[in-house]
Length: 599
Image (cartoon, rainbow, N blue to C red):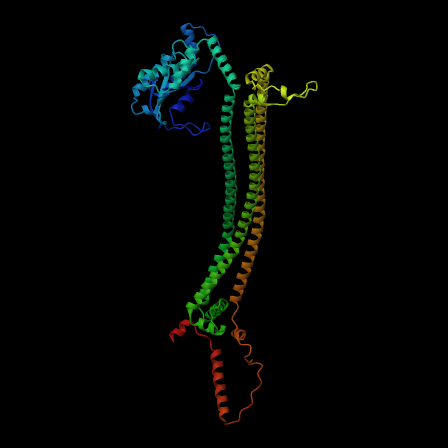
């Protein structure tokens, strides 16, 4: 059984709202409406089991304290207190959870109220199940409902503690032996004079131990062990801070990269929308040209140009590829789709190069931030090494001082031949005393000289200096840690501001680049549309693909007239007739595709 008494308060509503509902995460948040941790509730000295009614009854009783005093004939004097709410808890051991019943918990709560003298006060008992150990909370109204007097709260904790010891002994299982020892000590030293005498004895014993070399050695060993633990914790804390700051740099860089990518996507949407609008317009124009012979020739020529640019002709000429494409709708469609895909890939590559450049700049900035972070970490690491070396040096000096004090007794008798030469005494080796060294006499002489008191005073002086030096080292350590932390925070803030400035500059450059790419793309689309709208000059197209060494029919020399009636003259006449028929066919209107298929 472990009682826990809280300070008195003045708000019944807040106390019951806390204990009758689930625990909230923060005091700044409102109280929850769920009550999953509440197992059961009971009331005392109130004719209701409803918690809301009990709240109103307790509040009304506290407000009518003066009226109750006047009715009972109690003088309404003294200092008025508004702390009318007293709460405490009773907790059992987790091992008792399996066998503890509600009746036993209610019995213990009633007994605790009786110990406090509050058996006639209004109270609410609440059982919680949110911990491994069973426990109940008691919300007590300090105002007496009969005479309005306020319940005293002096030594409530000690009263409940003594009752808890008696409660465990009655149940035959003492689970808090340390509390029993403290109670016995309080009973043994109940008198103030005895407690004062006990305190003086403890101080005298501590003073004697302070001058004992063995005790000094034990203190130094404890100091060395604690120093090792402290140094290890300092290194662990330094590594933890370094890792946390490094992860923060990576996190900020990742956030900046993600924001850049999202911004790139948002700004590329209108560019891609324009591209796909142009693509759909080109598809409509392509399909419209496919409905006429001239349009088919145009599509075939455009497809041949694409095949030539992509290296698909394999030695064929542009004219032959155009003719072949005229008779293959599949080849025209495939070449058109490949050209559209090539345009899309080029636009995607240009846009990707822009965002890749921005991400590369952000990564370079991250590298600079990491370099600054490493420099700060190295400086802090060097300072920690120097500080710990100084602390270890002080501990070694203390050990040397202790060893010097222990060997002082032997050094006093072993110093031979240190006395000054006296000229009035003749040196006679034969008259030298050969008696053995008397250590006891030397020790008595040393005590008479007061060397022991001097050593004691010297020890106290050294200890005071060590304490002063240790305090200065701790102050310097805290100051250095604060300076390093502030420098690190300043470096991170500067890095963030520099990153934001660089990001703004890169955003402006990226916007200019995107505008240039968009303008170039629009120019290319307009040029392609104008080129496709112009009629195709077959002769010019032919001359464009004609070999360089082929003779020009317009610049060739006139042929020699043939002899009438010869074989060559007949051939020439037949050729002229064929040319005339060809000219007649060219001047005839071109039938549509449906008419050709009908024929």
